[in-house]
Amino acid sequence: MLKPTDLILVCLIPTPRDLEIARLLGWYRIPLRSAPKVVAVDYLAFYQPSAFGERGGQIEFIAEARGHELTTRGELLRDEKDHPRANEEYFKIQLGGLEKLREPIRADKWKRLTFLYSTGEYLLNAKLLNDLVVQNEERDILWRNLRERAENEQLYKVDLPEADLPPEVVMALLGIKGREVAEASEAYDVSEGYEVDGGY
Image (tube, rainbow, N blue to C red):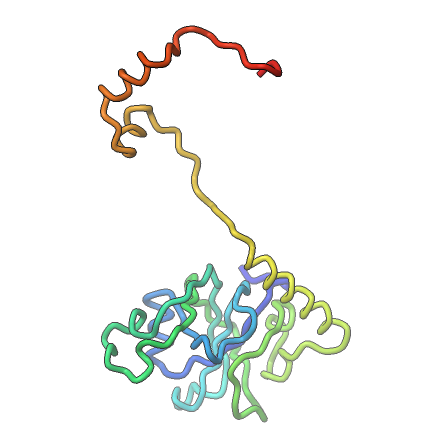
């Protein structure tokens, strides 16, 4: 659920096919060469251009951003392996389900948009695209938050589940046979206690 403090990336969804990919497959692509500096945001808001016909010139849908990875266009769109940009790098943004806004946010005077950072508070109150532009001292807070996200993204994180596996499963996974374990146990008399300096 969208919160007022969430970081939002308003982005162009070029065609209805791209919106269907987001809805059905749960991802959105951004070419690395034209990507915004920070893609680690909480939500994406999709601006629909004139390719959407009557539904163009507005934001109708948002989706939670659940992570991202770097890949190639050819890997993302396997039916377009011969595309001129098939080998170019793209961010693949993993998405939650599409959420339809109660009222679309209309473009009004805006005719072109690629990316715009905003907040959940601005998105929740916006009627027009211009209402998403963060102003004054709030803009400094937004940029500080974006900088923190960018720095935190560069930290190595491992989010592995705890595993309480029986020893025989661990041995099988590591390719250790039972006889090898028995021989190792005989070589080191593990049944006898041992003392280590330092009281450990």
